[in-house]
Amino acid sequence: MKIAYTISGFWRGVVIATVLAGTLEILAALLLDILAGGTPLDLLTGIAAAAWPALDIGEIGTGSAGLVIHFFITVAMVVTYFAAAAIIRPLNRHTLWSGIGYGLLLWIVMHWVVLPRRFPTMFPVLDPREVGIQLFCHVILVGIPIAWVAHIAARWRTRQA
View 1 (cartoon, rainbow, N blue to C red):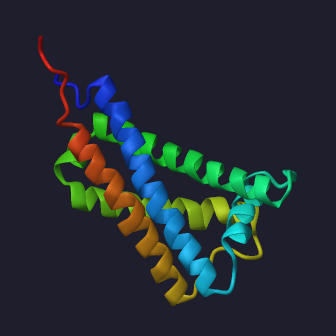
View 2 (cartoon, helix red, strand yellow):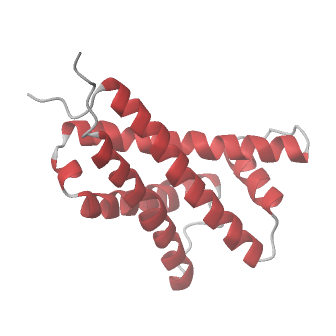
């Protein structure tokens, strides 16, 4: 049985996909927050507070922690996809559909499981416009880029001496 990834290709792909998807998602979140009248620091401290409610290391420190937490969550999403793609080969053959499906799955988990447990009075959000924005972010900015990088990483092979 042929292995889907080399070890170095797997981890290099994880880093690239994390930076790509994590950056696209946080930039979209920052833009949407600013358009809604918020500030980048408010968004980042909100991420930190959602993950670690007792954290209070000053506004800048808590905002920085929020950014780190955001990228840790992205790493978990990327590693999960890469591990699944190593086992379920069609994920790397049908990149677009796999990315769309994974983005939908991430949206379901985040907005119907994770956020409602942390903020039961605020989630799930059912406004069609908000759902559309959330789906765009999860599918186009996260799911598809992760699947695309995983597809490319599956082709990386070590050089033979």
